Structures are given as C-alpha cells and as structure tokens.
Amino acid sequence: MEFTRTAAPQDGDAPTRDRVARTILENGPSTAAELAARLDLTPAAVRRHLDQLAEDGVVEPRDQKVYGTRGRGRPAKVFALTEAGRDSFDQQYDDLAAQALRFLAESQGEDAVAEFARRRVAFVERDYAAVVAADPELSPAEALARVFSQQGYAASVRHLPVVGEQLCQQHCPVSHVAHEFPQLCEAETAAIGAVLGTHVQRLATIAHGDGVCTTCIPQTPRSSTTTEKEQE
Image (cartoon, rainbow, N blue to C red; front, side, top):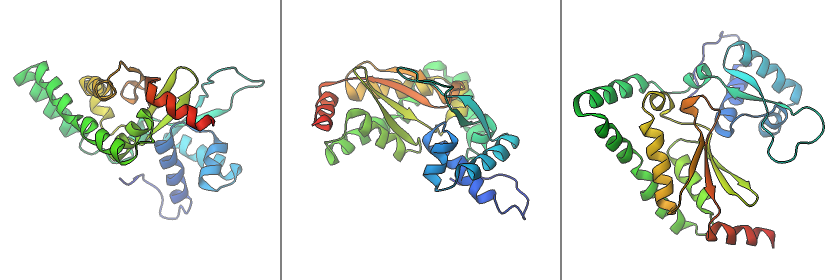
C-alpha cells in the first residue's frame, strides 16, 4: 500500500511527512519524541512535520492515555491519524465492498452477512496454527499479532501485569466497511476467542472511531510460562 496525498511538486518535505504518517499507521498514536526516535529525526523536525500534517487534516493531537499510576506533570500529547488520514492509504475497494454487503443483506438477509464475515476471518484459525508451530516461544497474543500483521493489520502486543495481554491492531483494512457492518468486527473477536479457547473482550475498534483496535486476552497457562521465562 502506498500513501497518496496531494502535494506541491516542489514540496521536498512530503516524503518525510509520508514516513511520519505511515509510522503512526503502523505503531498507533505516538508522541513526537517516539516518532523522532523511530525515524531518526530531531524532535523539532518531527514537530514541524506534525504541524503540517495536522494543518492538512491527516493527523490530530490527543491526550495520551495513562496506564497504571500517573506521574507528575501533564501527559505528553500523542498524534493519531484522522479518518481523512486513514483514507489517504489504499482503501479504494471500500465502496464496492460495502455495496456488495448491502446487496447480500437485502437479498439473503443478515445471517448471510454474518456467515460471510466468519468466512473472511478463516485465516485466523488457519494461520495461527502455522505460526505457533513455526515459533512455539511466542505467547498467544504475539502469535495472533503476527497472523494479523500478515493480513495488513499492523498488529502488536501490549503486556499488562496480572491481567494478561492486549492485541493492538493499528490498522484495519476493512474499517470503513466495518463501520456499517459490525459483523466483521464481531467475527474477528469470535475467531480470536476460538483459536485461544477462551473468552476475549474487544475494548476498542478503529471502525467506531478509536485510534487502535484493542482486544483484551486474559492470561493463559502458556502466556504465564512465557512471562516467567522473561523474568528469569
């Protein structure tokens, strides 16, 4: 996928701004300092690019969510892609997919849409087994992150003490369609729970305006063992 945005031919900073936007897509809402470290740029340069991206409506500043005990001072601002910013990435088949699902719902009923959604995420069960077999040291969430990343979701894992792990999908290839057809999100959540053999909870979705699709995966014996190894 290529990031396409109208820019003046003489705008030599456009490629760097595209890199800034793409790293936000792949890593989720980020501070200027985090972006500078990832892209090997100065914080001042990143802020200049963020100001322009914000002016173009590609990104927007948000208050950073704080997990656990909050320290002194105000939390740093994070920058997230706007809906227009996500539109700038290759999603040209959204309208066609939405029209097809509307036709399916009208002609065959909502159950047909749900069945389509289940078939679309068949890759979760298929690829999860292969990933675990190839790299058994991965935690369940890490294996799922690899599966979803292979399908364009830019997924990662956030480890949470005691609770377990969070599967974070910084990009969703079907987010615009899923806004109208939540069955797509529901099928993903069900597929994740099925391969893990446990109940999982979807906390946030890009389709409903959140910056990242987040699924809480409770701690399992396997992930507990992985955590113990990491602590040794």
